[in-house]
Length: 251
Image 1 (tube, rainbow, N blue to C red):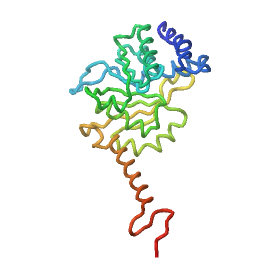
Image 2: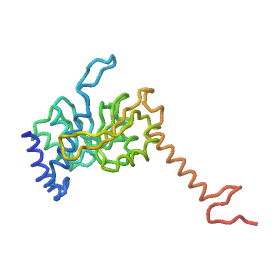
Image 3: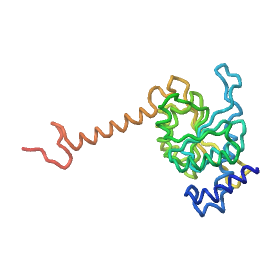
Image 4: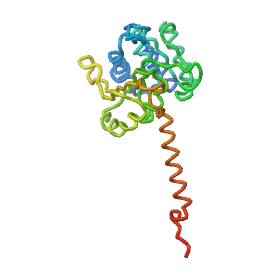
């Protein structure tokens, strides 16, 4: 708790001064941010099983688009057994995160990495994590494609969402399935502990192939975008049998 209090002080001072937290958020840091993220810890298993199914290494978690350290820092404080990587593309935010980690004495548990999720997933050593978490980073279908290469086969994606999570899931379910996510469901954390439980989407990366997605995933999303672009180009250019939009066939 003393470390959580210190973190809240850093958010309310340096976090606001550097533009990581809005000034209006300082009065609700605990209920809207710290506790809302900390209860996510109950969705993460105590230990990741090894290949034989026996308890293995401490769970490795990546917080994608960490920003001010949410939810990664509260998770690390609530679960000292976790090994947390804070992935953030903006340098000024990474500097703040580094200072927070140092002041809270979390150097051995938390690592700050500057980078974009798609690049980080493709660069050597191509690390994969037991759990990938994200808070308000991107639409679910896009987020699933981004997090898939960063999550080990059998690993879990946890996406914190708002009150419209069921509608979002309905729109994204087919994309998530084609990417290789299984057991996709909406769960809540913190019931009885916080005034409003945290809503999140939980999904497990398929074990069925080396990529876990049958070769689809982000590549599949890219292919769909390419097909749409080709269709739009053909519609503009026209074909021998069908003129382009806005043009009439010569007589």
